[in-house]
Amino acid sequence: MAPGQRALVFAISAVLLWSTVATAFKITLEYLSPLHMVAIASSVSWAVFMAIVWHQGLLPSARAEWRSAPWLYVLMGLINPALYYWILFAAYALLPASQAQPLNYTWAIALTFMAAIFLRQRIRKRDYVAAALGYAGVLVIATKGNVSGFFSAMQSPLGVALALLSTLLWATYWIINTRRTCSPVISLWLGFSVSLPVLWAAVWLLEGASFFTHAAGVPWQGWLAVTYVGLFEMGVTFLLWLKAMREADNVALISNLIFISPFISLLLLASIIGETIYPATVFGLCMIIIGLLVQRLALKSWLPPKRWRGKKSEF
Image (tube, rainbow, N blue to C red; front, side):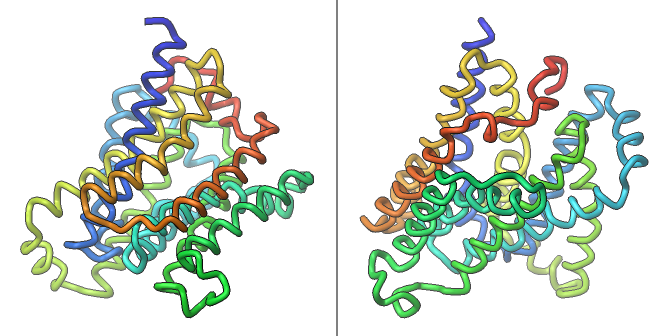
């Protein structure tokens, strides 16, 4: 199979897997709290990254990377997965997934303005247009089209706030990660290694032994769903996407496939868990996607860092 064909297979696989995770989130939250969910799913992801690091003989590189910037990895691990996913899952617990998922897509718009502040990158006119479209779409989705009603029309203002806060956390993580030059699987494994003790300590401090009583009562559907989240949302799907970017002959074409994901996700939410998809949700999502496409007119700023695209030997 030619590299371009492999890239398409990897990209479509990643898009389809990402399309399922909002449904998996809501199924998991029927059985587990957001804290339980992030602790268990992170454990699954850590095991996946550990297996990849070990299989590729990257442990010496990982140790050297940790010694070069331990406190940076502590910060990165506290942000992702600990705080980011805890807050994101809390937003999903408060909102319909069909609302929470589109709001999370605005992280790229938040990244533009945070990069201007912390990396001193120039904000272009099209970035302001993208932000106006994106956050107008957020408003339409959050109020189900009743923009004049604002807070009274929102199902959960706290859920909306948490979803938007998660975008700031993810943008922050992305900016911090630009400081590193190592393989992404090493960076992710080190971050998850830091976060796991913190997450399980939080579970113990907040709930103690009652967690184990609750866990014993979770049916197999809950365990399957949280394992799926750990494997695919927090685990291998991101690496599949990076692999697609490395193999692609036409990166612009491949990278634009990601915009299919939220629409497939809405169809799955409606068909599998029976969520009502409001016309305002679809309209608001279209506004967000159009805003992101406007921003993508400068493709270079959207590509993965060159260090993640140039080495065929890495996952």
